Image 1 (spheres, rainbow, N blue to C red):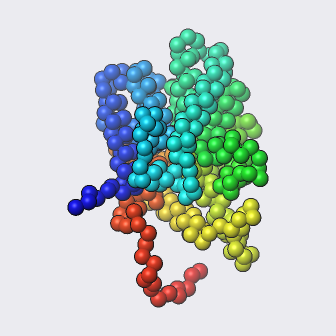
Image 2 (cartoon, rainbow, N blue to C red):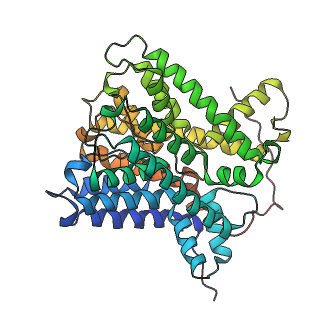
Image 3 (tube, rainbow, N blue to C red):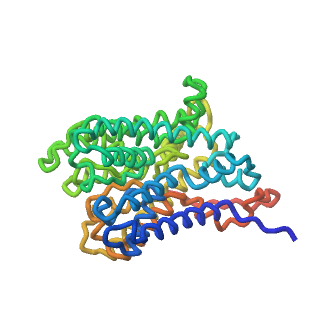
Length: 435
């Protein structure tokens, strides 16, 4: 009797759960903290690190020893690359083969429907990560040399380069990046690392290989078009929204920084608790959209938003949805709509539950926290340490589902994952009035 193979969707879910569990156990070790940490806080922080979210219920600099901080850094790196990417790279290094089920697993993790040379892709992803994090590290050394020295300068520069490129947003400064609002080099370096990390490995590799716009894939073109648009619109709207707020004094550079961070990296040079509600709404929209697929970022993905807009425009014009001289399939349009709607429903449900557990917290702050967790961003209005145990567990689940993807979670229940659907049977079409 043939052995039943595990669904790749289930392997992804269990894999991330396993890494989170190991991270939680390591953070609970006496050598990881100065005075101990509760199980819920360890679980929350491990989830935040692996899911590269950036929300933290404790001060990392004051709570964790060097060993504990190294564990967090490693969890961020594993979460950013993805355990599948790292696992398949290890297999490749030892000369092994992924096999059919392994390739299917990678395909589901990468979300790619096209043909990829997985072995070369994984090696390139690791190499790109190492090179860009290395460059970010050396620039951080220069940017922070006036504030730190010696081993602390080296460690902080390395940790924050890893955290920025992987869109994690966790910091060891003790008070976030508020004291560095005027450090132009640090702000620009962190922004570039975040933006490039959020483009996605498929885009970076395609740009390096194809070199010319006309040779880029439609996916790459979509990401390269929508990314600067979101950055520019977000920067302008945030700056205008906070223009008359004397409590923040947000300049254009920091507006750009926050617009970049909303792409799913949680660093902040501002006290968001003093922001206007309109500014928080703009931030929530940017966080919800997120970065590119197969990247270190989260959200519904900027390509989903791009397809959603293109489909809406095609519907209004009464014509097929065509972008860059290619027609977007009906299945892709439905998928984009489904992901968007499911994410919106889950965000509303999660925000409602957090409000029920912590009724004294501002609703605007709660939904900023909720979307930040769901989109794996990490930006917060400062309420994370104030959350009850129930809210921490709910947001931990939101970070987890946001990282693995709602479709992956739902497709765990798909029975015929290894075979196509039987198209010989068709049901009678049903007409339902919409709108």
